[in-house]
Image (cartoon, rainbow, N blue to C red):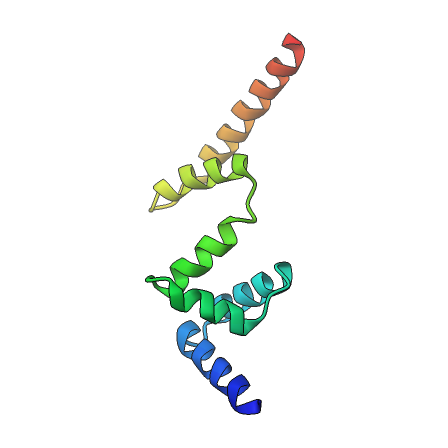
Amino acid sequence: NNVFINEELTKFYELTQGNPTYIYATINIINATNNTLKNILEEYKQKNQKFEDFLIQKLIKFVPEDAKKSLYMLSIFQGGLPVNFLIMIKQVKRKFLIQKYYRK
């Protein structure tokens, strides 16, 4: 039985390349879904994608729909956004929510 555990851990380490972020994300997925490393590795094996993409697919399921839209918009800007721009967006959103509330 220890042989299987060692094989799973070896495969997991190879997939994550020891990257702490990938290891942490996988552990959180396992805990949140009451799953096992073995099941996660088997599910990954059935997919034809990089492990990073597999993790992102799993993690995105935990993000609320309205937040996904914001994350998508932010991901478009590869060079990053200035802090002032983000503050402006927050202020516009707040103003919109206030107007929406008082229309009722």
